[in-house]
Image 1 (cartoon, one colour):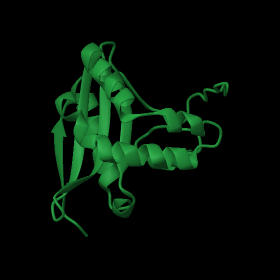
Image 2 (image 1 turned 30 degrees about the vertical axis):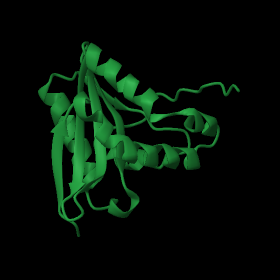
Image 3 (image 1 turned 45 degrees about the vertical axis):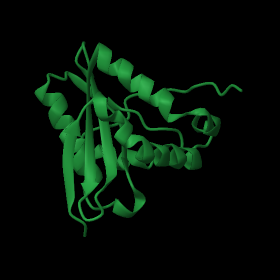
Length: 155
C-alpha cells in the first residue's frame, strides 16, 4: 500500500488538479445517462473559472493526496464556503487504482473539518447523472438525498 500524504492549498494552485479533473470528467462522461454531452463540452478552463469565482465570493480549499513513492498527486478535493455559510464539496476524485484505500474518505473528512472550523451552517454535495452509486460513499458522512433536481435535456 503506498504512503499517501495530504496537503492543503487554495485557488492559487488549482492547476495542480487539472490531470485528475480530466480523469473525473472522463469518468462522468462514461457514467452519464442523459447528459453525456455536458461532459463532452466541459473543459478544465471553465471549471477553473468557476472555482476562481467561488474564491472571490467566499472561501475555497483544495486538498491534494500525494503518492509519496511515485511523487505525484493521486486525488483531490475542492470545497467551498459561501459568505452565507453554505458549505459544498465541489469536486472530489481519486485515481482508480488508489480507490478503496481510504483516500477519498480522508479528503472528504478534511473538507468537512475545514467547513466546520470556518462556520459552515449546512453542507452539500452534488452527484452527477449516472453516478448515483456515489450516494453510498457520501452516506458515511451524513449526506442523504434531500431533493432530486430534474433538468430538461436540450441540444
